[in-house]
Amino acid sequence: MSSRKERPAHSLIAGSLAGAIEAFVTYPTDFVKTRSQFGGKRESPITIIRTTVQEKGIRGLYSGCSALVIGNSVKAGVRFVTYDHFKSLLADKEVGNLSVCSLRVRLTWSRQQGKVSPPRSLLAGLGAGMVEAVVAVTPSETIKTKLIDDANRPNPQYRGLVHGTISIVKQEGILGIYRGLFPVMMRQGANSAVRFTTYTTLKQFIQSTARPGQSLPSGITFGIGAVAGFVTVYVTQPLDVIKTRMQSLAAKQQYKNSFHCAYRILTEEGVLRFWTGTTPRLARLIMSGGIVFTVYENVIRLIGTGSPEGDK
Image: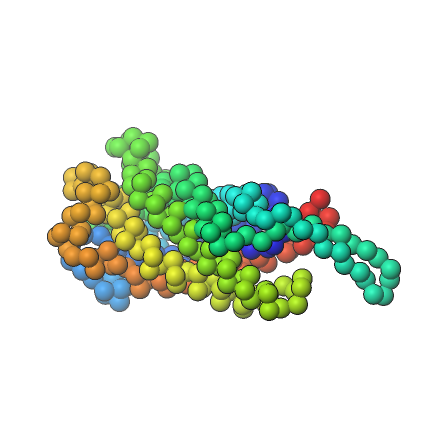
């Protein structure tokens, strides 16, 4: 993330593009993760991939993909806009940098946003996660989960994203696509809080060792984002499992609410079941963290927010 305060439109464009690219590239890992978290017989990631490809081909690994790509694009755009907004509200007082060009006498005054401490970054990320959960994540995740669950049945009832969405709304009402809102809000809040705090802290540390004003190489940005994704997975995985169970097709018959779902998983399947799907989710979030932050930073640079005029 840039130390400058980004324009909301620029954050929206860069975040949405980064989210769409990341969702498509990493979707097979999300498919495997979601399948492994459903109740019933446990299957290893390799087994899920092998049986899916044998029965439905490579396209089977992309069941429900369109819902996630659209939702992830909106989610990432909302996440970066709201995070930048909350971060600007919580940042230290703005500081000005005076630069002098040595070949020609020219003074340039650039305005930079003050540093954001880890606790403030955590709070900004938490707020961004809550907003994105309501606006984009819960509907897209519910539809995606139901499409994946349905595709695994002998006689699937949904014929794609549009038909599936219409059918869910007809059968369960508009609240049907908001099933599991509470665990999604908790997961997204924790996701963004942990992810942005880790990323911002590591980036500020590395930038403190570099020359003032020097941009970090894309490889370093990718690495920082990957570490942020790794930390996020292990902290938030139980919430992800509860979210998947609450959004499955059988959730209404099996669980009264998110707390009842968590209780049943704990008492009937054991505490380790809360970390089911960690490996594919870890693979996704490591790639996701690298892809999202790298694409975002490069798009922001491309559309010109790095110029002093862009900060007026």
